[in-house]
Amino acid sequence: MERILLASGDVKLESPLKLEDAGKLASLANDPSISQTIGSAGFPYPYTEEDARWFIEKNRIEIDRPFIIDWFIIYKNEPVGIIGLKDIDYENKRAHVGYWVNSRYRNKGIAGGSLRLVVDYSYRTLKMHRLYTSVMHNNPSSMRVLIKNGFSIEGIEKDSIFLKGKFYDMIKFGLIFRD
Image (cartoon, rainbow, N blue to C red; front, side):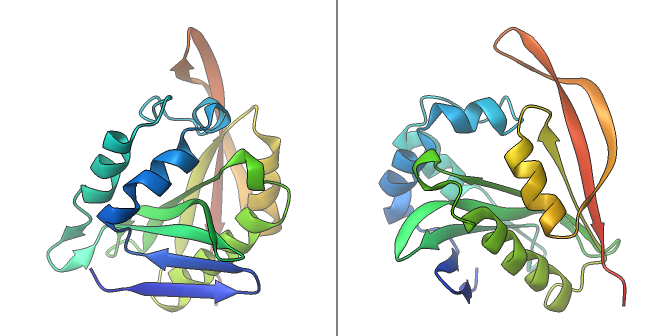
């Protein structure tokens, strides 16, 4: 996959992820707060180097076009998290966006700045019309990041995810690009 660099201020996004970065990724992702708020039973904790290698090596290309693009979030030259697009649908011009930042680096505007870069890239480069995502109801910080970047609430999926013996609602967000 071709190299994609996006940057603004102290935030830089680097794609593709490299296998030699598996240790760094595992260290960042091995944060219990991520697995508790990301809204996916598929995000393990503890997060191992093997998990990171699987994530880095998974297929992201179909018929010469990416259907997944993941970036390392770099803040002041330090990797701090991941942001990505998945289920990129070129025909319907839409993609799912997701992100996480290690808890040591939160409340610095990093997630918001990273999302701003990916929103711009999605519209200008990929020519998307719509971005969407879901946020666990117990993650108001992520909801604020989305709203500040132009997303709006589209609905609530009640008891949508079952984690550690409990059901959680997912708040659905979307962003429509208007010309």
